Amino acid sequence: MANQDELFKKITSHCKEYGFIFQSSEIYDGLSATYDYGPYGVILKNNIKQYWWKSMVQMHENIVGIDAAIFMHPTTWKASGHVDAFNDPMVDNKDSKKRYRADVLIENYRDKIEAKINKEITKAKKRFGDAFDEEQFRATNPRVLANAEKMENISKRLATAMTHGDMEDLKAQIEEYGIACPDSGSKNWTEVRQFNLMFSTQLGAIAGEAGKLYLRPETAQGIFVNFLNVQKTTRQKLPFGIAQIGKAFRNEIVARQFIFRMREFEQMEMQFFVKPGEQKKWYEYWKDVRLKWHQALHNSENLRYHDHDNLAHYADAAVDIEFNFPFGFKELEGIHSRTDFDLSSHEKHSGKKLQYFDPEMNDNYVPYVVETSIGCDRMFLATISHAYTEEMVPDAKGGEAQRIVLKLNPALAPIKCAVLPLLKNKPELTEKARTIFNHLKMHFDCQYDEKDAIGRRYRRQDAIGTPYCITVDFDTLEDDTVTIRERDSLQQERISIDKIAEIVKKRTDITQLFV
Ligand code: ATP
Image (cartoon, rainbow, N blue to C red; front, top):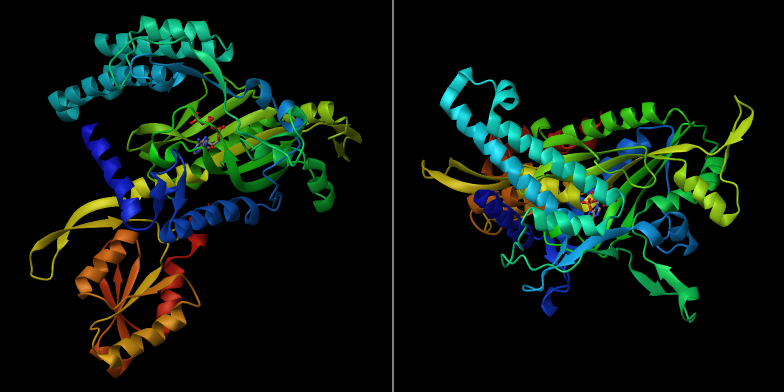
């Protein structure tokens, strides 16, 4: 774990040092859990959004996009259940004055038991070597079995307390498990209280409750209230989906893991409207499609499904796709079967029909909804954590040197290609390199760099994940060829100038990710 903590710190400082992410309002000592994306961060984030948007909207004839306002009529949040039920259980430690989410304290306690099981398995693997059968070991080792049972009981009790909003039992669990404040070790806790996560503000000059507005805590509601507008104007038939990318705001109780949990963040959500009774089929379909979307970028062993233990008030099935972040497996995306809860509730609160006329059945009904919801910032963190690599590579003197390289998928890399004249003080080289750069920049994000020795320039490009470096040397002046260096293999090829754009475009094209 210490190594993983160390790794996470390195990734965080790399993001800052190389212009991916800065703390918001840093000159005023920052604002907690809010971040700004820097020059490379914004391109990487846009590329992630593009990958999502194209996979969902461009690749599905029956999915269309919208961009709804952040502010919505306040009744929206009454109808959606957010005013009454969008709470997290909060608990304070009286000695350290630190605030925590009660459910997260309990989950972390359970994770420690899981870590014990994993330690036991690692030890046994070492002892038995090739003959080790993990499945059998899990099913028979008494210590593993006892801990697994413990974990299951904790999960079940936590889920029940969360489903019923039983704050007293959450407090009782914290006490029974002897959970201490991670900061001070103190077990002196306050009662557990519900805390609403929505930020509110005031509309124009209207004072009091009448002018109270919320910053949307999810983008989904903008889609639900526009369901009929979109369906009628695009003449879509069920099943069809509406996709949206946009900001969401949550007054998170604890927000400590860099961009994993922010108070202002971005979501990429898609609501898929289906005939009642068909939700199970589409839920399975989207579970599969969304996992494949992640697998196109990340190794399968870093991804897993996690079924929800306690279902939200609107859901009849829900699963998370978890990613193996440097701090362990955590939710990256949620797939929820939301029934007809949202549309029916908006019908009730607005007095307007939100029904679909089914021409085959010659009848109207409220569709069911399967949603896929992913945090763009969490996807960014997953991508950069997966890409961050420290490795030894041959250096110019025949020895070895360490390099830090972001092995980003070329389709997501912020800069696709850098053009580097071999020497800075040779105008014939720099002019030629500039001409090449001016041509390439019309095709993709590209950089020109002439400062420092060529090796250092390669390292700078490695650190921001540039997949290709083009070197212009004296041979270029003779035969119009350049060296193209590939970031991961370090292989160099000689190619003609008029082929650069085609080669780089082909190898960095986003279409290769589509599944
Ligand atoms: P968590 O359990 O981690 O609080 P959640 O279950 O409340 O997340 P959802 O409401 O399902 O999350 O939101 C969908 C997605 O939005 C999440 O999978 C996550 O990627 C992203 N997300 C939610 N809250 C935050 C946040 N505070 N900061 C960044 N991303 C977030």
